[in-house]
Amino acid sequence: MANSNLTNAKNAKNDEFYTQYHDIEKEITAYLEFNPDVFRGKTVLLPCDDPEWSNFTKFFAQNFERFGLKKLISTSYAVESKKYKSFYQPTLFEVNDPQFDEYKTKKNGKIFILNHDKSGDGKVDVNDLEWHYLAGDGDFKSNEIKKLRDEADIIITNPPFSLFREFLAWIIEAEKQFVIIGNMNAITYKEVFPLIKSDKMWLGNGFHAGNAYFSTTFTKEYAAGVYNPETGLVKFRNVCWFTNLDHGRRHQPLPLMTMADNLKFSKHKNIKGKEAYEKYDNYDAIEVPFTDAIPSGFDGVMGVPISFLDKYSPEQFEILGATESEGKGFSEGLWDETSKISQPVVRNERVYKRIFIKHREKTI
Ligand SMILES: C[S@@+](CC[C@H](N)C(=O)[O-])C[C@H]1O[C@@H](n2cnc3c(N)ncnc32)[C@H](O)[C@@H]1O
Image (cartoon, rainbow, N blue to C red; front, side, top):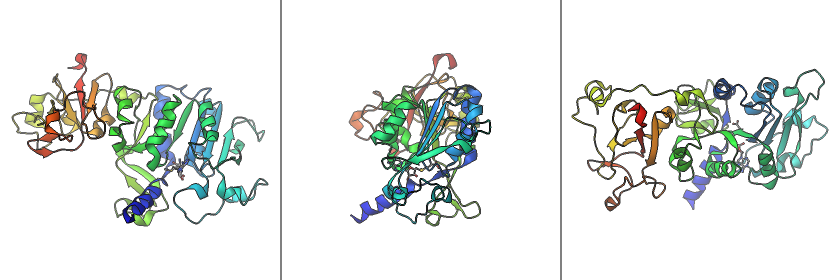
């Protein structure tokens, strides 16, 4: 019981991280560079947001005309429905609006819509956003938000971390385009990996140098090095963007050395000087512990860390499977079931989860 309370508290906090403007800008720019018309004539939905102060809403509203958007919709989740209860004060923007309602401000979600020049200043921008209270609390699973999902072409947000699986399934069942933030560990979830393997979802362009910074109200809970009191931000290294919109970086092949050169010159001490790459005891593949140690010219199956996906180009590699720890059958027959150990093992030592890949024939 005590444990489950702890887990609930942790989950509640993990749902309240707010994305930085320049991270959104950098990510969205990558899709625009690949296809300048990616948003043209499209309806974009930003669910699980806090539109009065969200950088997602601000960024898309400010760029409404430049992107050629048809409609921008942004919704928030009611304060009293949030798992984490904290002191709440409505913004002045809301209190000073004739629609303000003391009950609804806590119990209902809000919707912000942008689709025309309301102010009459000759342009459509953040000043033209119109808002009202939702009938319900803004839960993405509600029929009210599902209707908005169905109306949208592209769904973009940083969803609550504790509901990532449900949120992704909610997008996939409606067959929408999306750009969402999540934890890299989600890659091997049984609901996630099949999408990655079949190229229905991939990693986005990514956070600068792999560091994602978020603002949060729970700063005190983080160790030095995670929370920076000067910026007021927490830093995570295992967070990434998941998407099915194309971008240039995923078509850039990874420069690689041959196996012989890796064994001679690798910067990794557990590769350099060895006679050969290790083979797993219980999977039919070689162990490649670092993405930059993937040997060129090798036509067999290789087990690589999940962070490989950040460098994955579908023209260079084929994803065959993953280790069995999350989903049965993930390894596509590479696993020796008689070992009864689903984690990859090298000389009796377990290593972390792996993805199995092969070079595409033309790139061997
Ligand atoms: C990780 S935060 C991100 C907020 C914002 N999108 C951003 O990036 O700045 C996720 C938000 O979703 C809200 N949320 C939690 N459960 C939700 C649900 N079932 N439906 C809609 N929103 C939810 C949280 O309260 C939180 O405001």
